[in-house]
Length: 108
Length: 115
Image: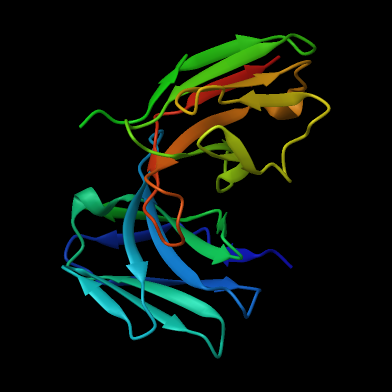
């Protein structure tokens, strides 16, 4: 089983829609979690950390479910500029493991 | 603030040739990482430096890959000899102290094609 698994998508959504997707992780002892965003042919950039109580950053909401070992990302009121690949990142014993990413395409 | 600098941006070589990549992290960042990202996959850590010491190189194919960060600033990653499966984007990243949960800053990467 992979350390971090993501639905590759693509998720094709119209502008203004809400899109959500999950990431599952295999190590129940994983300590911390993040979402990175990677635009086509660009480098990854930190989008947000994921806290145990869940957290929001503008239109983005991240949740952690330790019992089921997954994290989620929800994007509200999608913009064209949200089109990207979203990488789930899990910290295991101070080593970051990246998922393969979920691709989101927002259409006009 | 200047970001993480990498060169070259693209490199095309034939299998069994050698290649080297260079990275200059953000000024003052103690921790430097080299990642390999194969098309359609997430970045995979090759090696992590804390200043000029190696913290983790468990996934570095040491029979062909080598990396150094001699003065604790810039770093080079070398592949010798290259194989077809080394075709990937090589990303350098840096962080301030390397502590858990710290934000990584990535360079634009070097896209390597091995023919």
